[in-house]
Length: 363
Image 1 (tube, rainbow, N blue to C red):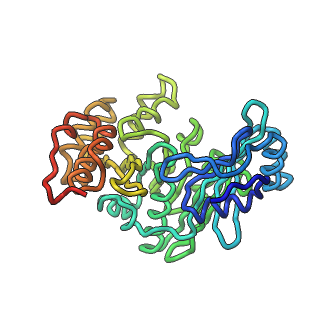
Image 2: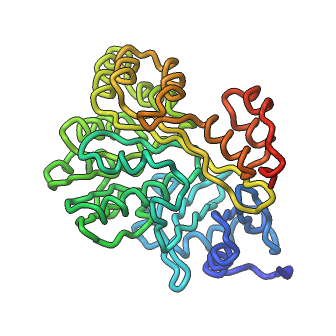
């Protein structure tokens, strides 16, 4: 890429981000536009952005209502569609008084569930007609793609009504056997909580909640799962036990016993995932773990014995469960990831340190 001393056009930057297979574009005052590819941030070959220029670039992507909301709340989630390129999830925000933004590329094509790297248990979860499925992981761990693949699979496999509540809408779904209604916070509904308060009157079979971000949303999500619907949502947590802790933390101590009982009854499964560098490649590979609902898991949740859950996942292969360490071990032994990555991502680093590949397994 040649050095460009001129102020770049934001649409051109988004095109560049997509064409070079970057996941994110960052606009920050005092830095050139920056791109994230395979987890790493690199500066584009441009001059650092002045505060005024950065502000104009961001505001140029927003309509009047979005600008008003941004000035009121000081941050804004929004979607951007670039003809011939695809869709981006934008987040505008202030940093030290300057307006800045981040854009995440959303591919046009939703991958098939069999292509994303999750184990077969996920198909069994998608076949359920009730219960709560949580897909968890840090930002950039592929949660949105996993849920999109699940929704696509469900829509193709059975008839019904699927309603999503998102902030903003990311992947666009096509109706297959199911009707899919996508509702965007700020456009189609005022908030997650408002949408969920009325969603049961809209005859859904499957409800997708973009993120569990406050007590009201969690409470309404649990109610939907408890009343005979399949509910899929996300949390920013790194593993299955921490996900349950996070949900409990939304509620005061005097409510936690009831929430534990509701979780034990309604939870169908937790998929915790992350993306780590593939060995000898510029790609990343999905690592995940799966907790499914069994009588023992229900009892451990109801009694708040979350420390028992990892052991249950290790012993629960017949119930479709597996741990992050199991997947890391398989990936290392099959030459997909380095030992350093396996050790860094493991709950039990000593287990990974003891592993030895056969010569034929080396990448």
